[in-house]
Length: 203
Image (cartoon, rainbow, N blue to C red):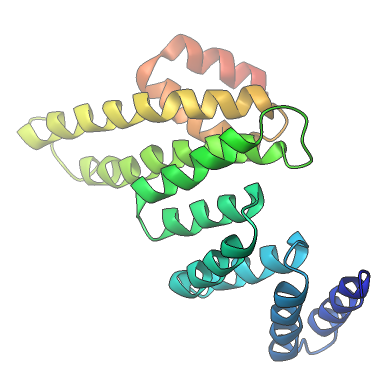
């Protein structure tokens, strides 16, 4: 029974890789794996990706809350933070992500989640600001709203910046979670930092 999760993992892979793929049976096996072996990130990670892809955020939150009621792990808390971020419940997302950071000080098996958690905290400020950037692209620079929006963008970038910088410090090779975001922030806030990072990234 302790190794039964492997069988379910291979079954899930078989269903998704066969031609044509059987997504119904794949989902059934993934759900069974998450229920029987909640400590295995393979099942929880896959089912959360499925829920996010399908826009089923509330279903995902119900499941991860049930898992957290049994065992509060950094991985489940990170998943909850991501789901709450997708729901735009940013205050609650910050609480979950802060717990991930607090639980993972040092060389723990899930320490890499700390960088992801910092980056997701940056996302909370950075990506809503992109809506304002898009709005400003449609406004005349003489429009009073343009300058007000520019101030909001800079404020959001200032808030996001230290979180992305911390993610970069912890996971310098994981550029996907901080690279483009920091570049855009530096372009707006500090051209010297922008040029230095652009050079570092090899652009």
